[in-house]
Amino acid sequence: MLAVVLFATVCGVYGPGLQSKAIDIIAGTRQRSLTQNLIFMAAAYMMYSGGQLLRGLLSARLSQRIVRQLRVELFEKS
Image 1 (cartoon, helix red, strand yellow):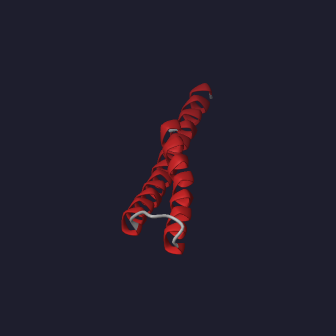
Image 2 (spheres, rainbow, N blue to C red; image 1 turned 135 degrees about the vertical axis):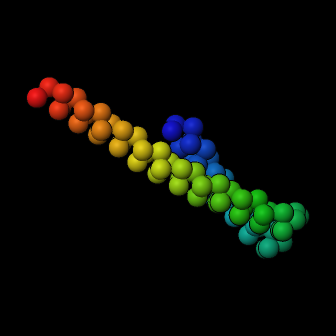
């Protein structure tokens, strides 16, 4: 879960940096390929979204497992 959170965070931070570079390319202050930059930016945001989805699924599964274990322990004692 930690690896997924770190990966999504890195992608979430990297995306706006690429967006800033794209704006600089459009404004003419940088000489790079806008298409390549936009592809990297889209990939970063898609990986961020995928990481967030995976984080949510893992978090839900983990919390359900913990609740199930608590119920098992509670009903074994009664």
